Image 1 (tube, helix red, strand yellow):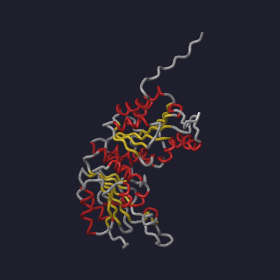
Image 2 (cartoon, rainbow over the protein chains, first blue to last red):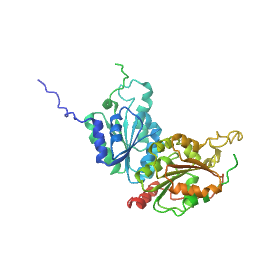
Image 3 (spheres, rainbow over the protein chains, first blue to last red):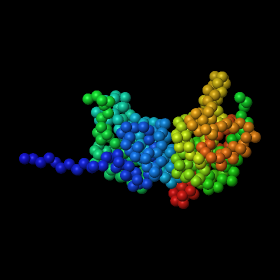
Image 4 (cartoon, one colour):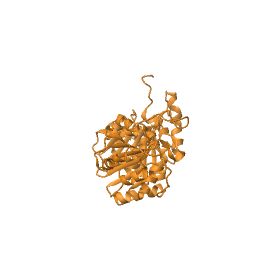
Length: 182
Length: 204
């Protein structure tokens, strides 16, 4: 008789709630987002928080100068976006390098793992490449059990190490959007 | 509409007259950068050398982080046209300590004075815009206190509003097209950021 390999015990706490805990541990004061199903539960937790100012943006690009201004004023921030919005940020993604300020973004991936919508693939597949081209450090998460430690490490690299860091929350983690289709 | 008569350099000098540690200034790339520097470079100035479309967002992030300080964003019409959505985002937060001044000469000055969209229509084949009204756009975004300044007689009130009036305050100032001396601040972005934080927070 063979024994199945031991799996890490799945956490009882939703991974999006764990990200919120990491935000509090790292004293995040401003959170920028565009509407997003993947980040939805996290965005709501931030909106309800008294210690975090949560801003909806008209385009992801706005998040980078906002983060620069927050840092000038002594506050830490995070930009939440989808891979489809990453392309909108690329020119201003040079700011963290030029001004050398800590920058953290969490990206929910589309066009990545069983995606049904062909329009999501070009930017989804391009996301790691364009971010790397702009000097952004990449972390990637496929499973719920790795989320907390990875976002925590990314926050440390950003706010202690002074880097621009992106965490890719892969579609395997978030789930395939199917609009009710099987 | 009559030709603009206000000159940007003396106007910006007046806006920044007697600036103390309570005034935090962000200037957009190009002419606005040289304007605030000509008025006197200081650590609490953040003059941009690039990042077109960034000043209003930077001003908002800073205003929220430092609610007891006055934050003044000075930029041009070309820069403002590149980030119109940021005015709507300002309106979602309504920061009382934020003032935005757009110096509108209706030209892209750094690239050779081509017409921006704020230039009049029917201004000839190479110099026509759409007559875009940035103050009206700011009001439409939800910034109620957004007006246009054209005359020398309005400048004293402009200075008072920008420095002290409950924000967000948006002022579109129609200025002349001029050829002015480049007065340049330090260029290194990390240095500009560090000296700003040192002056504001006591550490880089």
